[in-house]
Length: 252
Image (cartoon, rainbow, N blue to C red):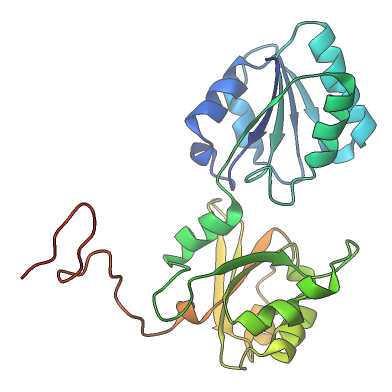
């Protein structure tokens, strides 16, 4: 196996997986998403490693670099931000590699929506509040099916992690309110979760646009909408003394 699609994690170089770091250190060729991946991760690369920034590359160019590396017997790492499976545009790359008969392996990474929860010191699934997490985005240049528009998803009142939508925040708020969220619903925005320049803004749907106006947050930010952000909740049954499960008997 000479080709690896690796999740870089959310930004902090120490949050790449052990396996991901090992592959980076062994790679002969690295193609990284320069507009999103922390360049500090390239410090793991060995001397003489061939490095390509895919920010200015097309899909055929990326595939050509991988194919050339394989033909030369080189180990190639395609480094994607967060976890490659979420808005990573890897399916088209994998399909192209399949057509060429090039084998590859995908290495998962820590997604930014998880780093956001860590930054907020927040559990997304609180008993009695929400047991569902919706990962989505607002419609922009990439269309969203009608059944998956924010207005439709808001009807569930679940925790929502909204990617790639910070520049459309006013539209996001309007859609969430139209879908059923109340004006006082808590919302948090985290820019560059786990990076040194991480920023956190907390507000409600009624106030968030005003709160964020002078914060300079215009890209690489996660929007989290959830009553979990400010609510009384039921304690988990998992650690309740009166609750039995296969590893522990309830107290009598």
